[in-house]
Image (cartoon, rainbow, N blue to C red; front, side, top):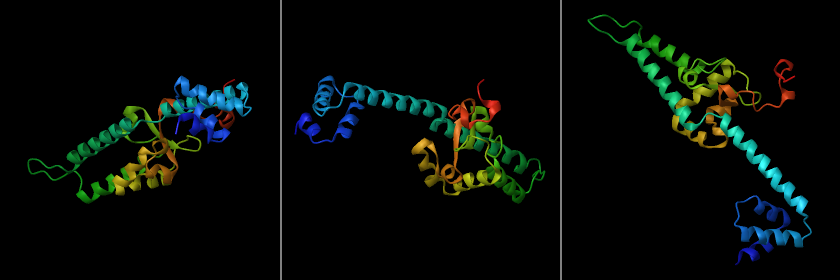
Length: 204
């Protein structure tokens, strides 16, 4: 089946969708001819292409605001290194001295930190160093203590949790359950329409 024959079997909406693809000039000419034969005006075609270009630009801008997979992995690595350092300082013994903190108490502190580290402005050293922040997906505000607990409790199923980060908006399972997203701190609020912002945040 030739490309023309394939296109002739498509409805008009699907044909317009083909124009959004990166077609070769000869293939694009075929689509344009078929659309013209169906009475689709050049103005309609231009509007479809302009709308798609605007959506692509918005999607790119949103992607630039989100923390990348590499940044999130590095932030987690920094947090883990900080935890190891704390463990060495608080649990280690030398010259017959007892540990500064009992293992059971350190475990409680570790879990408390893990579960609450993203609440408010965030306490994660990795995210702070890399300029990242966990915010509510709805309005990009600071997340609550319950949301932080729900978001981080999924680390118990780390592999399954991490697989979700490859999906929409790079949200792992914990993000989806807690309705959060990880953004670059400098870009927080940039994706919210002015009408949705408090009056003090709107441009004059």
